[in-house]
Image (cartoon, rainbow, N blue to C red; front, top):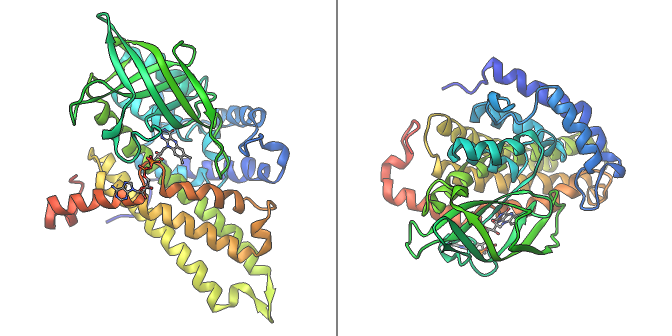
Amino acid sequence: MDFSLSPEIDVVRRRVRDFVEQRLIPLESDRANYDEHENIHPAVLKRMRAEAKEACLWALQMPKHRGGGGLPVIGMAACYEEMNRSIFGPVVFNSAAPDDGNMIVLEKVATEAQKAKWLQPIVDGAVQSSFAMTEPDGCGSDPGLTYTRAERVGNDRWRITGRKHFITGAGEAKHFILIARTSEDERKGLTAFLFHADQPGWEIVRRIPIMGPEEHGGHCELRFDGLEIPDENVLMGVGDGLKLTQIRLGTARLTHCMRWLGMGRRALEIAMERIRSRDSFGMKLIDRESVQGLIGQAAMELEMGRLLTMKAAWVLDQGGFARKEVSMAKIVVADALHKAVDTALQLLGARGYSKDTPVEWMYRYARQARLVDGASEVHRMVIAGFLRREGADFFAWGARD
Ligand SMILES: Cc1cc2nc3c(=O)[nH]c(=O)nc-3n(C[C@H](O)[C@H](O)[C@H](O)COP(=O)(O)OP(=O)(O)OC[C@H]3O[C@@H](n4cnc5c(N)ncnc54)[C@H](O)[C@@H]3O)c2cc1C
């Protein structure tokens, strides 16, 4: 068993780390670098994206022939962790949700014609994209509740009616992946469609205010009332919507974990710097056993999440689906992020609650981790399902799914 990174991956990881350290972290302390939704300001983002491209650190998850870095999933894990040591990192490298997950699924399942039209502009950073699945009082944890419908019109088109909400990036996105019901079949009742923001027949009802900082384009509620989509914009086949969702969310959940580990590490770094120098009752905070207990526990939980993330990444690189591995990583990393950020905030004292460090930003952001892309309770249910079916094989060594 070898836990080291290959020299090729480690070179890229170090270059990402240097870029984050030198170009991005210094931006975080100046409010002028933020937009009104507490993300990196678009003008600053444009500048930093140009630098990341110039440094060949752009879209590392995409194949080289598309202008990406061609990294395997293990390489992504190592680099995404470094990226999110800055709260501005992932979007600068074109590795932020939801574009990241949308690019990965399109690269895996779209036809060459669909890739040229819908994927390449996202890889180039020319457009943003959204993934529209969740519905008010419909599809959420249970995709079987999807009520947004696609009905056949003529021989070659579909007409969409329904609603979606919490659709990240929708306020800015041009390319959308939409999940809609095309039949009542339990396994084959959903279909994935592509549409462009400029098409008529849909609208943004509102940008939903949230407790944390927002991705560019926010989290929106959408209404569909007659959007027409031609057959050529069906992804995979009619009835493959659930399959596409599983393919998309599998890797997207794991890339969340990769990024969250970086954010958790950074929170602990900020706390470590403070407790090394802060005096209290005659000694440095770092020399107190109770403080060591807090920070040691948080670091250990991050490392546990990291091992699960790397195991799942390895299974994906071996060609497996890594469903149970991804579910385990998602639960543990979401909790570890929470623990790391909460611990950092506590040890910083009042400063942690202020906007003088990015820790309060991370704290508000971190709460979504246990909900998005499957609540922890649902992932536990998935893991239990595997244990029930696989018995002792659940714990088998190797990359079997
Ligand atoms: C910031 C943010 C961004 C998002 N971005 C997107 C996006 O881009 N596209 C998109 O389509 N969606 C998006 N979502 C939606 C997100 O994926 C859903 O919120 C998530 O799948 C949960 O669905 P729900 O909110 O309907 O909760 P529900 O399904 O109503 O579940 C509520 C709670 O009930 C419990 N629960 C549910 N089912 C079970 C079960 N089987 N066993 C035990 N407990 C259970 C859990 O505690 C769960 O948290 C986003 C959400 C947020 C907060």
